[in-house]
Amino acid sequence: MLVGLQGAGKTTHAAKLALHLKREGMAPLLVAADIYRPAAITQLVTLGAQVGVPVYQEGQAPPLQIVRNALADARGRGANVVIIDTAGRLQIDENMMAELENIRDFVHPNEILLVADAMTGQQASDVARAFNEQVGLTGLILTKMDADTQGGAALSVREVTGVPIKFIGVGERVDQLDPFYPDRLASRILGMGDMLSLIEKAQREFEGEDNTAMQEKLLEGKFNLEDFLGQMQQVKKLGPMGEILKLIPGMGAQLKEMQAQIDDKEIARVEAIIHSMTREERRKPEILNYSRQQRIANGSGTTRQEVRALLKQFGEAQKMMAQMGQMTKGRGKLAGMRDMLGAAGNGGMPNMDPAEMQRMMQGGMQEQLPRGPRPPRPVPNKNKKRKKR
Image (cartoon, rainbow, N blue to C red):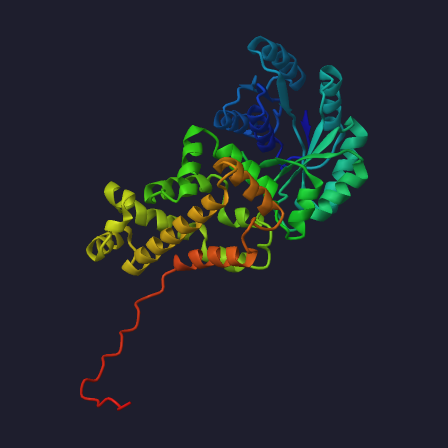
């Protein structure tokens, strides 16, 4: 049962929680028991369809009746988790608490989770204390934990309730709900990144036989621009580049500078350039001569210098991945890649100087930026006499 004030994000996080449990192999059912807020039921039905989870609703029927019938429906359809989206108010009142207590006493839920806005600071602590005293919480979901005030709210809410924080909302998308790990959050707050969370996200998005084959091609340095485009589109599934960079250890001090260099608009421009190529050109970038580069620039709304910069960046990426492939020999490519990811979580790469690795990454990213036309070379003066040796 999810509880909380109106506007805290209960309905949205009910769907996020359903998606998380579905990915864990469970069969959830969402229950629309908020009959007071306009469009709350419609919102939950829409979100349920988005995450592929069924929603039980009876319109404006009494909430206790909705919950009772929802449990019977869950048994009939084989759902093993029921998530109840309850009603909230703009402020705590007796009627709301009485309704929640009635649902609690009938359902006896395994979990009563408070959804609280981490941006509200002290108010979040007061709300948590009141709900815990009235209905008895078993855990907390803190929303908007991607904001700057995240640390204080997490500490104070945990202190006043004595119940654990179980999940944190780290963005607006339905897949941006993370299990709460205190050490990982502390690492993010201190600007030390969170490599484990990044690896887990990547594993969710990049699993499958196609991606295993792609890892083989990457580590052999044999991938082409078609593969490059596919990998770039998959990386976009992880979220905005700024959020990904925050999870990489050691990126705190250079985050603003690097965000300016590889923002999402820049990625869209790279995609436009590659889409303007023919299939043969994407598979054999070595055939891209002057006239082809100019045609691609015209088709993508960019300049020939930008097309050349992308090709140079792609060449550097091929070399770097081939070097990584050499490093993994003897252990198996996929095992070696896991070693490198684990080493990255500890702040470096095996057998590679971290400063050199950083220089290679930044150099490749900077090549992507437009540099403008080169100044003309000086014309030698043929009439000038050479000095005798």
